[in-house]
Image (cartoon, rainbow, N blue to C red; front, side, top):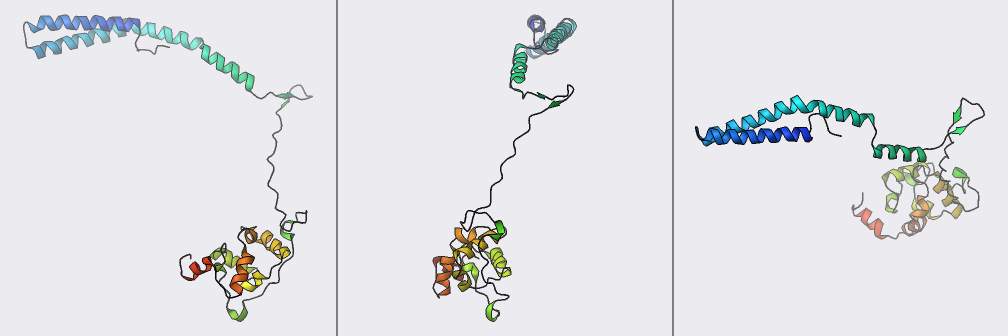
Length: 222
């Protein structure tokens, strides 16, 4: 499609005529005036003829061509429309002639809750057995549970709120009790097993240290 006022055979012709006329004017004027003045005169004449003749004779042609292009879709447009019609989802006609029903989308399957206690039944928060909890830390002083890798400040507060304050409590958890805690750590489910809390707690409860607990004591972690 040739845009209105754009380059076509008509406009090229008249700009060529303008260029020739400008050159002739430059040659003739150069004999009577300076080269710069002759050049400016030739350029002005070339631009004037190009603009005037193009607007006078070529604008109507460009508009006619543009109108023809808009009236008839291109082969590419027709091809794209045909392909879109082939790939578009088909409507399913219902028993009522006037109504059409689109195919029902398939819902995404949700990820199921893990079976923490391995009994083959997913009980969610009722997995396993709740460990014995304390109403408060012994002697009013809780162990620094953050020395267990995987327990940060937020998770330590959650453990305390659930009644777990000391390393020996965690070290004594059975598999069933681990399953219960895994299932009930809101926002941190499964962390007990994933970060091996029980194994670390056994070392710390016995007065030992782990590489991670040393870093916590030295202030390199929190």
